[in-house]
Image 1 (cartoon, helix red, strand yellow):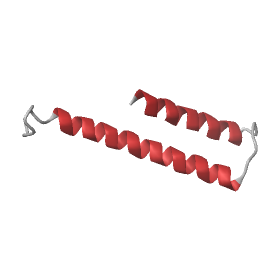
Image 2: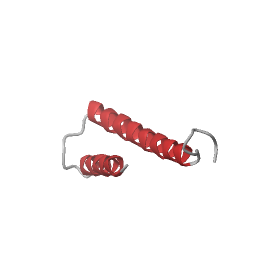
Image 3: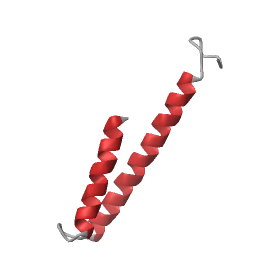
Image 4: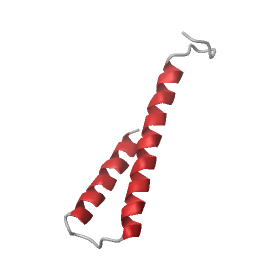
Length: 64
């Protein structure tokens, strides 16, 4: 989970740097950053939901 948060922050830094004019601005780069950011956020959400589901089960796979 920490890795996902780190990747999201890194992607946001990349988007901010491009918006500040510190790198080349291309349509492909903007689409790439948006797709990567969306996929990382969805992955983080699914990871959190899966962790919650596992914690709500007892050791045999039944609801606690």
